[in-house]
Amino acid sequence: MVYEQIWYAITLLGSPRGWIAGAAVLLIIYLIIKGELRPSHKQAFRRFLLILIPTLTVTLALTQGLKITVPAERVCIPCLEGQTQGCNPYCLEDNSFPSGHTATAFAVFTSLFLANPKRKHALVFIIPLLVALSRLALGVHTLTDVFIGVVLAVFISLGVAKALQNKKLI
Image (cartoon, rainbow, N blue to C red; front, side):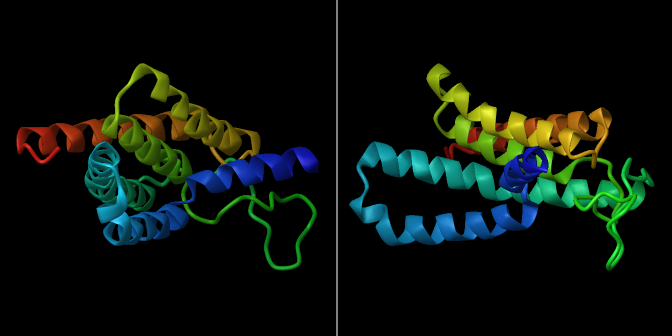
């Protein structure tokens, strides 16, 4: 039980709704404190937001679109109201392909890395890797669901960053 609660806490780090709210909060914070930041921190924060917001938008739209159009049932059985036996309390009732939590976590942390791409910052990928593992450990996704979530998010992040660089916005 404690094992599942730890994985559930980790999986929340990839919550799509949480990161939509988080991106909005980060934008507000940036607008309030940007005058107080050192120029290098201001640039990094700005680059992160410029990459994050379109990356999150496209990633969430694509993952939700795929969940609607690809009828991949979950490997788990969701618990109905009052049900406690033979079901998975972490199982959602939507389609499983691709993993939205995994895609969201990789979108956020790839954006963060691309805003300041130094080798030592690659450690941030521990968090989305743990989110991906949590989706498997909780039994709510297949390896394919998780893998495609990673691939989508990383390629979208790279594409957004490249487009911003081409327009000389970052």
